[in-house]
Length: 119
Image (cartoon, rainbow, N blue to C red; front, side, top):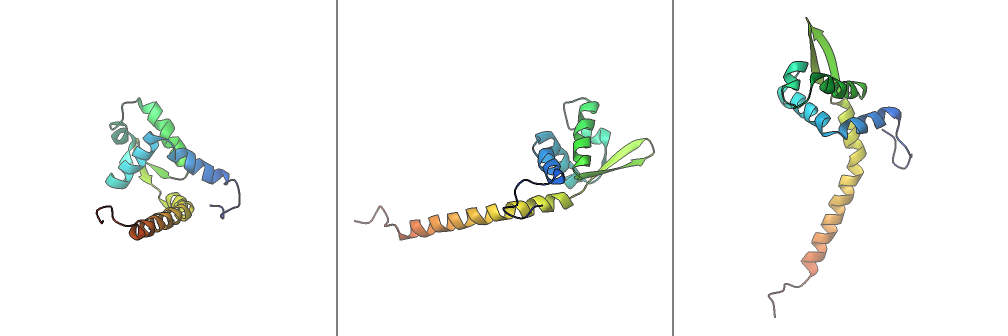
């Protein structure tokens, strides 16, 4: 990931964020996280779409480095690759810190305000 203030991300970063922008792809990642490596057909059973459409989503995830594929006989087995997600978390961390500080400041302000039920 780029350093704060460095401007636009790299092509690899852009691919990760673009992959995560789609709900179907996020659901595929959730399934792989919760259930472990799975063949394409098992993943496809979770979606109301044709297998070629799911294959396009898997291709985007593969190109972003979020899943890995290997063959076992005639099946393609997919597994989660979490390293790019750690980079996303690193990118989001300053925003989490920002909101935590803002909420703490709001809590401090509310603690200083008089209660409505006091005369």
